[in-house]
Image (cartoon, rainbow, N blue to C red; front, side, top):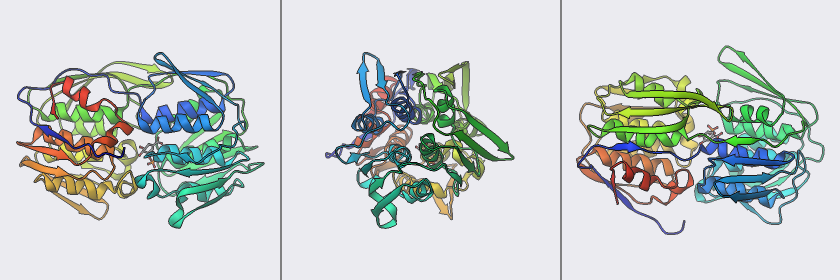
Length: 440
Ligand code: S3P
């Protein structure tokens, strides 16, 4: 991704219409490859997201000795069993992916091997201490740059100890890193989370035969994993990514007359905070065909254009829509009234400082938006005129949000670099054009 790829979105002459299959869930795709590599036997995965982030995980699992191949529409992983990964011969480059880097750090921590992790400039600026600090307790040693940032050298534990840790921030990545380390530790690994975060790791661990207990204590969750299980290969059907569906969904809500169908989207309640929020704003989002596929709830969505009203988004909803605030802010700019999104400190440490970058994007397009502490406040009522080029800071979700914005503003909106969209949503531009969007 050395050449920046500028793109411009313009208001289409006609409504957005049609059906679009969004690509596989990124979180579930990373986990399917990782658990497959740690299981005994052959795991078959359908619907895997073939974005750059997930391909980094595939390459890392290969470098650690698992066989990962694509065969037709299916991916096959021949696993090495718990504790069976081998020392990689070279540095593991996780590209733009925080999930890949953090979850892999958990796996490496309880393998008796030496490995070095790095990533692109965005990933190298992101905090890793949130995983390395608790993982040290299992016996692993980490050496990184100032602030614990990548590149990071890992000396995994020979006989890993189980972990018992209370997460200081609600983070599915940290929780998952600890559970992955706990897989190769004797005894019970216990993680307390202050608020529920996406539970794909817990679901998939069970699917592969591990014993995971989850105890709810008010809003808190205590997750306990029995160490050193025999993970057995399993088939995984990856649902469409709700975080990717968010972009055509908001585009359909904002372009007058639009009706868009999005079949096969994951509806895990710990991921659908955006859908709930948009409905509170008055959005017409119909769900049919609800079913369980590969241990995860899935459904078919139909989204219709309509007027939106501003709402207050409470801080406790943040974990269930943590990646969706940039696109929600775009929707809010076209709503009547004020939308206040509260408790967004974690947005500052995503692929970019998304709190600042989301505000800058909307300000540049002429919207009224403020950052107040960790809150984002969008004043609706007057649709932003557009006519700006947005700096996307190596952040796929900012790039897609800005392009959706440009489909609804009177003047076009351009992005400096759309190349990073391929990390999570390869085919985004083609999919949006298929619905009638004007992006070139
Ligand atoms: C993810 C968890 C979230 C999210 C990221 C994917 C995961 O990060 O932002 O895109 O797959 O576990 P945090 O857990 O750090 O909030």
